[in-house]
Image (cartoon, rainbow, N blue to C red):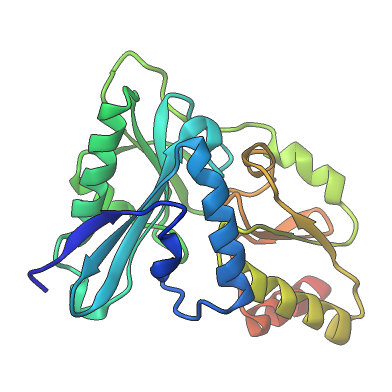
Length: 258
């Protein structure tokens, strides 16, 4: 794949590329992601695709100024990476991830930002910290269970980004019942929300409360570190990213002592 190039998408052509590895463009989750993405361009979001002439879309990166970031962090002045991914197995380990992050860094510099930040983790659903450590990023804050807020600063005097405090207190609002927080930022959230809701109702006779995160401000106020999807049961975060129906059932059995 020597013909790879990075394309800066727009609201008019973003639909031509599979986003976040999602290939079924007719799926509800993809359509929600498409609508969500188009709304973010006006806020300064950039969605760039790594494309090959013969293989099509190979990967992508999504980033946005910190004041509009859909993560529970205070990162004003920074460009915040939401997602970065490689879709083709044969393209992994080739340095393409770094190539896309370099694009973000250049955009951030041209926009007079103070640096680039990302929420990373070694678990699932997030970018692995190793890539960013190699590129000079440093972990400046953490959040349970294993989330790292990392930053590459251009201005050493500018305050570090931080996780927003007080999220634990917000759990008191959800001390009774099952709550599913979901949003259009992740195309996999729609399927997970539907399947989890069905299992909660049919298997555990629990009617879930579905809370749709509609703005960046709301995403910064959620009681879990991922920002755009989470499950809270009786005041406890039991999942901080989309999970399968089977995984949800196992979580609930444990929580209910079944």
